[in-house]
Image (cartoon, rainbow, N blue to C red; front, side, top):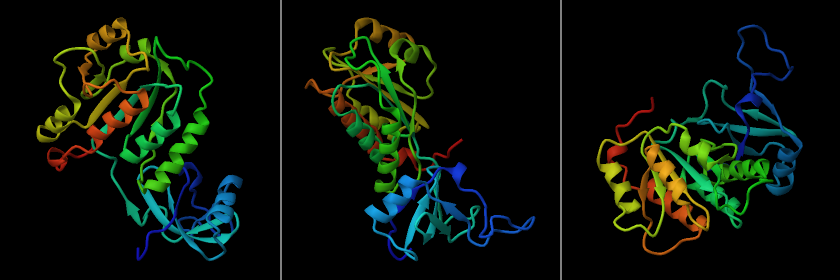
Length: 268
C-alpha cells in the first residue's frame, strides 16, 4: 500500500461472501464483498475517524488477514480483494506467549492493552489467594480494549482473553513449552532477561507462559503447586514491583528478546 490505512477489526464470522445483490450465482466470486458495520463500528468510522463515502480503510479479521476496503455507505464497507486472497496475511506470532496475571486493583486495562501491543497471544486473568479483586471482572470491556489495541498497533492477530481461573485450577492444568513464574524474596533465582536471551539462542520454544502474582505476592502453597506442575521460578530483579509493572516488564523481556533462534521456527 502506498500509505498505511486506518484499521478496523471485524471478526471472521462476520466476513461472509455476500455480493451487492445479497445473492451470488453458484461458484461466482462476489464482486467486492460487502461488510455491514455494527452501530458502534459505524459510529467510530463516521464520528471518530470522520470518514465519508469513498474513503479507504483496512479491515483485519484478528486471525492474520488484512483487506483494503471502501466506505460505500455510513454502515457498509466493500472489500477490494476477494476474501480468500487478502492484501496481507501473517502467520501466528512465534513464540506464542501466554501472560497469566492475578488481576490487580489498579491498571488491569492498561496491562492488557500493552500486552496486545507487545504481541502476547493469550491473556489469562487469575484469581490468586491474595487477590483483592475477585469478581465482577469487565471481560467484554477488556475484549474491546484488546480489539482497539490490535487495530492501533497494526498487528494482525487478536490476543485471546480467557475466562478467569483461580490459581489452583490454572497450575493444575498442563502447559505447553517453558512456564515461568515471577516471584521475589528468593535467593539465587535466574533472571528473566537472561532466560529470554537463552531461549532465543537455543532451540526456540513455540510457546512460552509467564505468570505474575498479586500485589501481596504468591502464597507458599501457590508456588509449591506451580513447581509441582513444572513451572520455573524466575526473578525480575531486586526491586519489588507492582503487579502491572511486573507484567509489562516480564512480557517485554520475552516479546522483545533477540529472535536469532526463532528465525527458522515454523508454526505447527
